[in-house]
Image 1 (cartoon, rainbow, N blue to C red):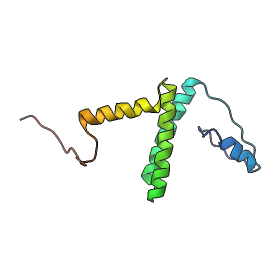
Image 2: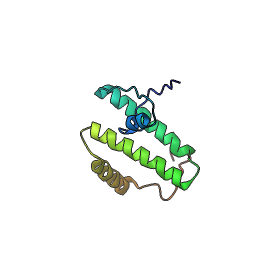
Image 3: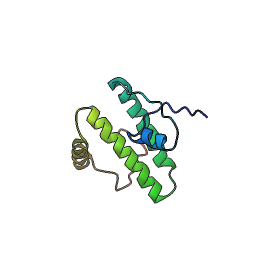
Image 4: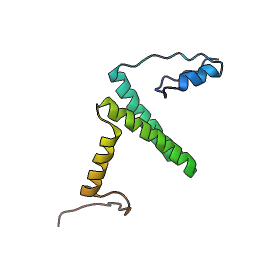
Length: 109
């Protein structure tokens, strides 16, 4: 029985499929396709975080989001350390989300 996926997968997934007795038909993406698929994967993984029910599953899905962010940063000729540094600097300038502030509206006085 044939299953169609048409999505970016982790590097070792085709080997795992082959070890299960199936044939994995793959191709290598060019940079533009890779970028597009990484953004799709980021949304997919973010949705999986949202839908996770247990702490263990949430953390597992966050690890997947992290891996996609790492890949995007490398595609942009950077690395995850730069992303963390930018995040820390932004947190210093604008704050984080620890105070749980929900902005309802603004208006001119």
